[in-house]
Amino acid sequence: MAKRQKLTNNTDESNLGLMLSGDSVFSIPYFQRPYKWKLERLQQLERDVLQLVDGLTDTHFLGAIIFHGRPTNPSDPDIYEVIDGQQRLTTVFIYLCAVVKTLCKFEQYDEASGLFLKYIVINRPTNLISNSRLQSSKDDRKQLNRVIQDLLEDPQFSSKLQSFSFKSLPAVGSDSGRLWNNYKAALRFLSAQTSLETLERLRDIYIALLEQISVVQIDVLDPINGPKIFDSLNSRQEPMTTGDLVRNEIFSRVADSHPDEVESLDQQFWQPFYETFKSGENSLFDEYFFPFGLIKNPNLKKSGVYAYLRQQWKDEKSPASIIKDLASFQDAFMDIANGTNRQNHPKEIAAAIERVSEITPSSTYPFLMRLSNRLKADSGSHQDGLEVMSLIESFLVRRAICGHEPTGLHAVFKRLWEDCGGSPNATNVAEGIRKHKTVVWPSGQEVRSCVLQRPLYGSSITTFVLKEWNKSLGGDQPNAKPWIEHILPDTLSEDWKSDFDEEQHKEYKNRLANLLPLSQPMNQGLGNAGYPSKRSVYSHDSMFKGPREFAKEFQTWTPKDLNFRAAKLAEWVVDRWQS
Image (tube, rainbow, N blue to C red):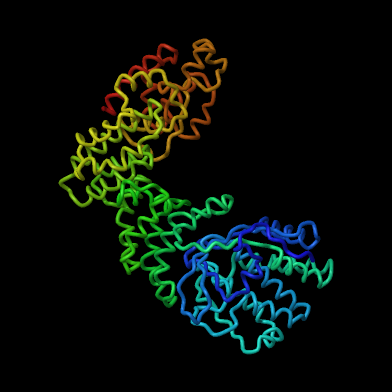
């Protein structure tokens, strides 16, 4: 076996054996995301190890492990809270456990116990919650306990450990999952290698794993700097988010508490806060912290949110109070993001928020979240609030129709509340927006021109405009999201060539006047049919009133008809969303 060579001059580059054999414990933050390496990642590690074993390479660099040393009792092992490296550390740990199990299978109990006591556990009394050298996050703890207990089930192996007694990690949840499955996969890999070769093959594998694979250990003075280093060194790994840091900061305050206290904090405060961010199969948890931070300090950059919040909380001892502060704009955020009414606003305000939620970029959230909270707390501000919501809706719709990107809106809205003196009304909000000379507020003529001539099919605003047009006609409003129908179809068929030539088809097909809201099945069923067939379906079968009214008004669909409708729509749009 070739002697391991260093790949860098960094004095903190060391092999895995040196890192794992010291008087140290590596702690994954309690509520960190669970271990999730898939089979292909394991197989890549196995190929890397076998290249070392077979002499194809001399060393393998596993990257940087970023951690933060936690204060401990001087008599206890050092505890390093893992900021980045959870997946790699956990994988190496369970492979070493699999090595121990495989050695026991071949009755190599002295060798197995030596590895176990040197790399898997701390073999002396401590005040720590467990004597496992790896202390995983909540969702993985029961599985990690199961892995170590699987080793101890062999009575001959246990007898070699003499007075050692395993102190399990306090755990809840399931003892099955990715960590346990990957341990079993590691056992299968090692079994296959030893059956094809000899027991020496197993020794070569674990020596390569411990002595020829290196990492750079980075102990950050402040955990806030971990993600910055992570982003530079590990761009292909799973990124740390502000939400991760916030959660870890909160629970670090109870890191040395009894697990029952940690679980109580989680169940009573953190989980209700965290679960509220679920939106269907997705979660808006990580999207919340930047607008929340801007409410606290409009000068913040996204990368500075955690540092600022952590500074604000430095004298707050109660994790529950921090969570309560974090939740203060949560319902407003979810309403604006999803169009819901968690704030229990009156019908008109809830409808205004729902409309804006369909079109507003996240750059508006700090202002709108504060406005929503103000409207909830002060019923006397409702009229001003409605006027402000209407103004912002008109501003956003006009910009979208004219094709203006949301670039620049962040600078407008992050300070708009302060620009309005904390009491927004239609007048001072309009003044606050218009003072930003680089942010265009389109005139009525510009909007008219774009409705008449700009191809709006495919624009994010088009569905919203057609829904509002359909609502303006009265009658029932379907809950189904409409599909956009080309009256003059996207592909010019023979049925249409008598009224539109190729140039006209290209010019007119994607304009707003050529579009209608339909259900998905109806839209797909009509295809390239001629106008008489389409008109009959619009008139009799559409769940949307707009197509039914359209069919009554237009007996034919020619360039003249299309231009006539375009002019009517342009006037309606300018009147509906006034400046």
